[in-house]
Image (cartoon, rainbow, N blue to C red; front, side):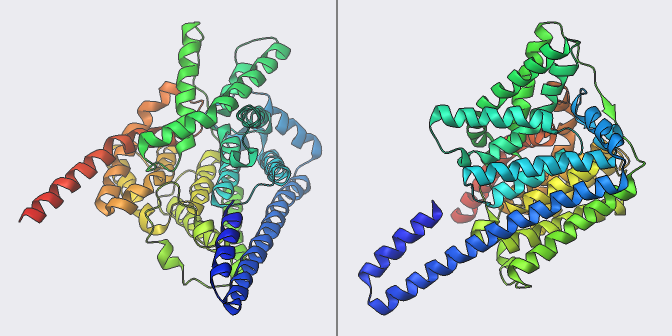
Length: 453
C-alpha cells in the first residue's frame, strides 16, 4: 500500500514537472523499491538462518530421543505464565520449539505476501521470547487459524492482521489448560482446546483495535491487554462452572549460562545484520531517539530495517546488562522477557524512553520487593512497554509510570489466572489509562496558568 502511494505521488509529480525532474523521481522510486526488495529478501535469509541454526545446535547437543520427549512435554502439558519450557523440556527442545514457530511465521508471511515492517519483526521476536515459557506450536496454530478465518469472514487481506495472528498466542496457555488441565479425555480435550483457540483468533483482531483506544497507544503491549481481557472473561466463565484453576510455577536455573549466551549471540546478531543492511550509518539514530514511541510508531518505515535492528540490539544489551548488574535469576521467562523487550525496539522503544521506566520499576523493587524474584524482574523488563509515556511527557512521568506498573502488575495476575503471557501488557494498559489523562490535565492547567501570567 505504501509503495502504491509512493508511485501515485511520483506519477503526479512527473506529470507536473519537466522531463529531467520526472526521470529523477522515477529513479528515486526505483531505488526505494530495490532497497525494500533487498531488505525483504535478506530478512527472510536472516530469520531462516536463525531458525536452522537453533535446530542444528539442538540436535548437535541433545540426543534426538530426548529432543522429542522434551517437545512432547512442552506441547502436551498445562502451562501458565511461569512455566519455564527450558526446565520442562530442556534447552534443546525449547530451541526447536522456537525455530518451528519462526519457520511457520515465515511461511505465513511469504504465502500472504506480507511486508516485514517493524510490527512484523516485533511480533516474530515477541513469539521467540514467549516460546521460552508459554507459546508452543500446539497453542500457536489454532489462534493463527482463527485470525485467518476472521480475515476471510471480514473479506480483508490476511497480511494486514499478521500482528494479531502472531502475538495472539499470548493467551496460548489457556488452550493447553483446556486440553490437558481439566482431566478430559485426550481427544475431547485437544478438540475443545483447538476450538477455543479458533474462537480466540476470531475475536482478537476486533478487540485489539477497540482496546487501543483505551490506553491511547501509550501501552506498547496492546495485544497483552487484549489477551488479559480475554483471559479474564474465560477464567470468569470457568469459575462459574466451578472449575478450580491451580497456580503453576515451574522455574529452573541449571541452564542459566546457555540462556545468557543465547541472548547475547542473538543481540549481537542484530548489530551484525544492521551493519549488513545499512553499514555503520547512525546519523538517523538521534532522530529516532527523539520519538515518543507511541503506537503506532514503526522505526522500519520511518527510518530503515538496519536502524530498527541496531536499536533492538541496544535495548537487548541494556536488558541483559541490567540482569547482570542486579544478579537476577536467569531462567526461561527472564531471558524470554529480555528478548521481548528488545523486540519492541522496532516499534517504539529506545534508550531515552525506556531508562526512566527502568528507574521507576527498580525504585519500586528496592522499596517493596526483591531483584531475586522472577516475577519482579519480569515487571522491570516488561515495564518498558510504557516507554511512550516517558517519551511524550518526560522522565518524571516515566519514573512514576514504572513505579505504578510494579504496584499494579501483581494484582491483575489472578484475574486471568496466569493464562495471559503478556500479563505486564495487561497491567500497563490500566496504568496508562489511569495516568495519561491525569498528566494531560496537569499539563493543561500548568500551560493555562503560564499563559495567563
